[in-house]
Length: 355
Ligand SMILES: Nc1ncnc2c1ncn2[C@@H]1O[C@H](COP(=O)(O)OP(=O)(O)O)[C@@H](O)[C@H]1O
Ligand SMILES: [Mg+2]
Image 1 (tube, rainbow, N blue to C red):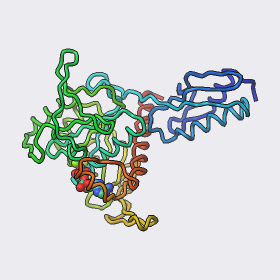
Image 2 (image 1 turned 30 degrees about the vertical axis):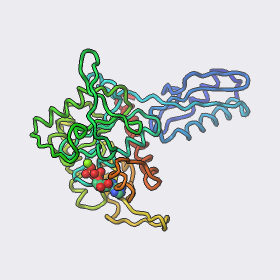
Image 3 (image 1 turned 60 degrees about the vertical axis):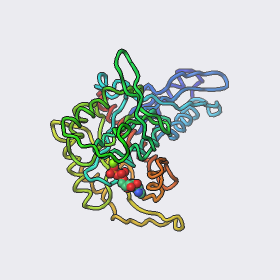
Image 4 (image 1 turned 90 degrees about the vertical axis):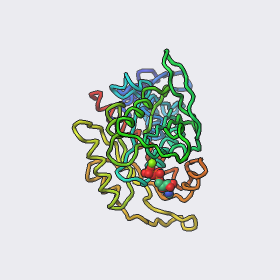
């Protein structure tokens, strides 16, 4: 036990390691505003994401270290906060956005839009600044999910006329569907798709965001290619349902992003519609579409399975009413998805910085 000084407190905290980044909190620069008085130690613990799955564990570990190595009785006040770091190379296009994450799938109807939107909601609820871009030019879902059917306003920024995303539930939203009548089919050719997507990335006042989630159309077509070439993607999340049919398509999507010409990191797999738990049998899990497909896919490619999202009968009703919410049935699974995604981004970023 040493006396209570700045040095002794920092020495104690240097014994607390971030299990993901495999370095101690002092070396990682996560301790800020350290103040020591006779009757209190106080500091900020600056995490790499507001969705840090290890927040409580790290706070407790800091308290224990000070208790064991410095003073068993001194009250320790820790303010856990976060600063998401900018993805390397994000300094031109979308320069206020720390991470651009695309959500893709091979097959349509696996719940990609629902998952993208719910993931965005979950990240926002944890305190992150979040945007959601609907890149499904042919079949936009975001207008329906959030009940938005109004054209975005324009704003002049540095002499450029930019679209202003629409705010709903704490998220900045943008979709081609905001500009077309509901149900109106968009018939576009490849080059037009590329230029529309480019506009959504370059001619929008996205402002400062921690995470911009991009809801891709199904498959491996123009939009995926244009996005991968235009936007500084931190990575891609693959959504699948458990059955073999969906897996085959998901494999194609993964293979495309892994092509040498694109080389976008796959951050992990989310399995949607994994099981159904009836209200009157909360201990039961019925695997309606089979079992273990997401896990199998993740293992095949050496990827993390970020989360398994249960079926939620409320989701369709909410989508029809234009008010997607996180329900008791799914919120925990989405929280896990958000935390695991944020964790993968932090780990990759840290590794890319040569640590
Ligand atoms: N976990 C879920 N539980 C119940 N219904 C879901 C779930 N995820 C998606 N759905 C429903 O499945 C349909 C397809 O979802 P959507 O997100 O539009 O898929 P995609 O974008 O992959 O085409 C929608 O009607 C949606 O409400
Ligand atoms: Mg969709």
